[in-house]
Image (cartoon, rainbow, N blue to C red; front, side, top):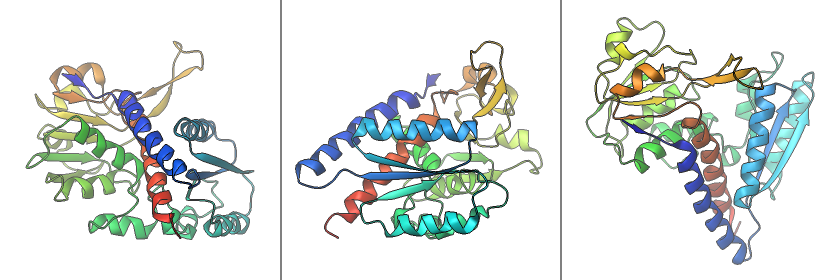
Length: 291
């Protein structure tokens, strides 16, 4: 069994991005600029945005944080998105999800200029991804593809089972794995799938993206499979200072001995999601040069 180290891989990619940023600045261009809109004070969102700002500093990006209280009116939020769309000094931005219940998340996503949608959630970017055109790919699927590529994991002709059908991970992941550059045969499974355990056990590559801690157990994985655990659920823990820990969708202790490759939680897919956002922002900045 080989551990797929997303933390180490993300560090390598950050260095590659920093090198590109240095070249841009040396050529007289401004550093790439990423902004984040944060609504409310959700602990997970606060932590994630803080990591993104730190990531930007590490690679030489400029970053901006726009804060709103959780009672912000939808029109006010949409107005700020329009301002960011029009800001020529800004290459890309994200609206941190989830949003309060009184705000229509899909309406917010669609308000973002696709050219600045570095999260890859806008229907234009999703559609371009589906048909294989250049696009901003959703950060988590992008990170997973990069891990498979850098670990030289064979995908052509392999049976890939994606467990989960969210618009953020499951659906775009299934599309990417089926494209000609990857050439896997893909099955999308979910909580209503019949014979789910047997289906998972048939996978050469199993991507667990249900958000259900410990759902994938040892008997659901075949010998030699590649297992990618996307789950990052906070669960109570008496062993940590914070009182919680991150738990994946896979029971690591049962599954790891059977795998050829497996991602840990934490330290697997999570760091790659963050660095993929940087990659998309760099792409946005390079496209804007000369505008």
